[in-house]
Length: 577
Image (tube, rainbow, N blue to C red):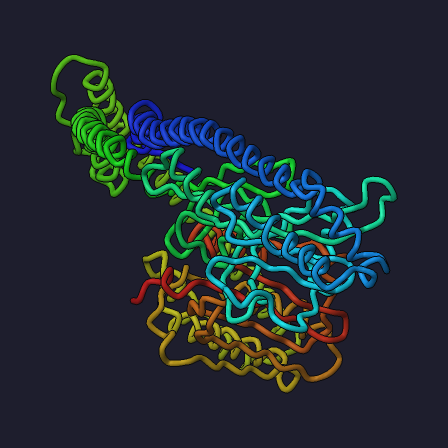
């Protein structure tokens, strides 16, 4: 592929100026984005570590709170009685006293331990329920299936260890539908290790809210806590379900309805809760606006400088070469007087001066060689044409000898008159003749041969009128007709037909018209692979080569099937006479 100097200059400027500018404009903001994100992630990681520490301390406090029943002997004694048949042996007053201990003493002790405890529920193994909630004096809902609740099952599976219960509805309280998170524990007899009951304290999320508020989230950042099942425990701002599911999958970037957020996360080892700090990508983009503005200004300035330099340098370097190309195109069209205007004394000016010298010498050389080639070609052409005339005359006189020996004097006289007309045509000046005159000459020659062969030979000349004015080399067809008579019809023992046709045909896919001349006989024929080309056919082929570069001559023959010689000449190469 041809590459111009302007293209090379363009590539050079792209590599040296524009490409570095683009790299800087792209890479500089990307570097700052990465740096700001790393800085923000580091800051959020520190914030998350502090928040995790606070929550772990808070959960430790809740853990210690659930072992409070073990510090009150009367509470443990009441639970033991509840879980054995000894309860039925107590007096009603003793039963009332034990019930008051479970419903009052223990809740008050737990409430005094943590102010953010909303209430407690104690479930002894006998199926009784002791609930204490400040905002719900009715207590626990009657006939509620506590043993089938997830938090109850988690407490049993913990087998005396604390169970951190994720956010859930207080559907076990009459008329309450608040959402809380809880700590629960299976109370066991220290001596026999028998289960005595399940205690659960409902904690208010306000404590977590105070912790998150204390770390001071800025720039639209928010915090969220998910339990080990991906359920949302708390969020400092609304978090849609799609964002929650992405957090649960541990994605580093969350796509929410409010925008995209980068995520820093940590897991609380005690409860397997996930703590997440989300900082909005919009805050990063806001910080980068100035960087982008500076980069865009730098890029615009660089591009302006690059365009100015490119325009000046390309005009200085390319314009002289374009003028040289225009000069060479004028020379290519034949204007050997074209000259390049030389200005200055640099390498381009020296090249222009050399171009002018070359054009001058080229004109002299072309003029000398053209004249020599035309002279040589004209000499060859005339030599070939001169070969036809004696050859034709020799064959014709041999035919006269045959008529004389046959005693056909009247026919001989007619033949001599015909010959005089043929000789008059051959002796006329000019190297070219109209196709109409050539066909008339061939027809006279055929009539001359018919006098010799009588009924053995028939002649048919058929040509389209539009080809009559076309000019051909003089006596081009006569050798072909003569060969057909001497080598095709004369040796034959049966009457033969000699057909000469001319017309225009479309050639090839382009449909370019061609002049097609066919000389056909149905004589004895021959095998082209075993026969040597005669003088007449070679002469015609050579004259066609000298007269037309794209002309063709095709010979098709077979023993016993006759011969067909076809000449094809592009119509635009044939002059109109």
